[in-house]
Image 1 (cartoon, rainbow, N blue to C red):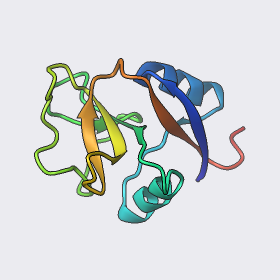
Image 2 (image 1 turned 90 degrees about the horizontal axis):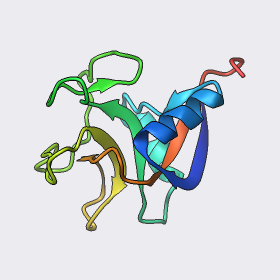
Image 3 (image 1 turned 60 degrees about the vertical axis):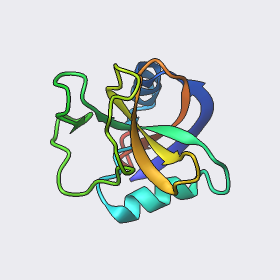
Image 4 (image 1 turned 180 degrees about the horizontal axis):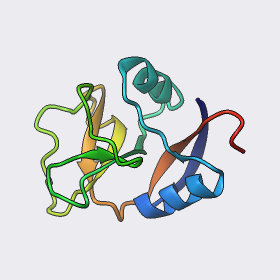
Length: 123
């Protein structure tokens, strides 16, 4: 898999659109190794970034953008997901409040950085 980091903040849907225009999707860290690689792109910065995980269709049922179920690997911060401000259907990854690199549900209209993934040879 190849990854491209975008440092221009965008909403979740605008991030998805940008990745699709490049022939890919938002990054989907389905294992610890991939998650650590994605996190390393923002070290030593304290940034949150969109990943390709959401529960917009059914609250609490998170799925990857390719339609597959969340699976066994997760890196939720303690107490997450929590829909803390009400409508938090999209997922960010990163360091927040010095709790280490974790996942958080967030409102999809927030403008955040993002990472796209593409299979080599597709673009």
